[in-house]
Length: 512
Image (cartoon, rainbow, N blue to C red):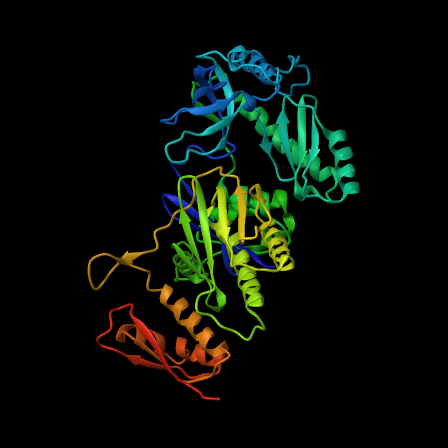
């Protein structure tokens, strides 16, 4: 598996594209005006305390107040309140919590009015960015994520990522964490901590402690509401969370960013510092790596897959629905059941990519092609779990029902990524699919004809003259590439009467 991070920078924002074996699996944008990112910590002011909801609305500087439920306060919120009051005076500077006297844990079944009062200041962390008409979801159970571990102030707990399956490794990591854990702080060992030595863990811990101390220094001079600790920028955040041996290159068109990333990698993964490159080509960076084309073909309502199959993705306020279609494909499979399984496995891989790429959250219902065999349904379920295991966002998958439906829940922490892929119609009013999508349609149809159990000859593609010129221009034209791939010469016939995106395949069926 080969992983690449492509970063496009301009004056107002930065786009991050994560590729796995050349396929776009994650797309992020960081803008200068993005004031509310997951992980940011604010010194906020409590607004209305709603006893009926057992929650409070909190002013974090967003037009809509953040929502803080009692269960998101954390058991040590009284200690946090006491700490904030002490630090706000400017006289208390023991930020390590070594000599800080903790309060009793709050009652897990208690009421919000017993803990918070309107107008008081409180440290809160963004756990879900503003989505649609809702303000940010927040928590006062703070955490500071590092490369190998997460630092949890006002806690004494040590836990290890559930993704580390080896029980001996879990025990080893717990012992190491216990040996370096500072008083007053809890630690969560992340998946990437597996196999790491105590020195590496301690260095990461000290970096997180430094961030905590620097944050505390800002409290006395800060008005409310104000952000006092920012999550790392998206480049550092992505590298911190997913950097591993599979990364082969990090490319950006910003020379200053090259140096920033190299410095960060020097701290977290020195062996990979040399994979950071500056993009010097005149071809725009996203076009050079085929990202623009993948964006155009991946974000529409209909998503094409190999062998003629496709997905239809519908969105509602409550859930997402994905329909799997076999299209007009045909192959030499022995039975309809095998064909259904083959298409479903292809669809499962694409669905895992789509969920991560679009950052779809909430409830997702997938209508796979019906399969009678319980064994095949189990194969599909295992494959879906396997391809979804690379997704960093928390999710849960239920086994397929007898109707072929699979239900997935995926944590929603930021707005879903929507990219408009349709373009103005050059022939009349309205919009059409992006012309670049035509190439995928041509190749899908060609693959179906070439791999069909029937045989065809004299395959001709009838298209608009402009499209015909694009397909045949140059020695290494797209048509010549088709010839090398499919071992058939495809005749391209320009048709003056055709609309710009209109096309038709004609052919002669060979009688057996």
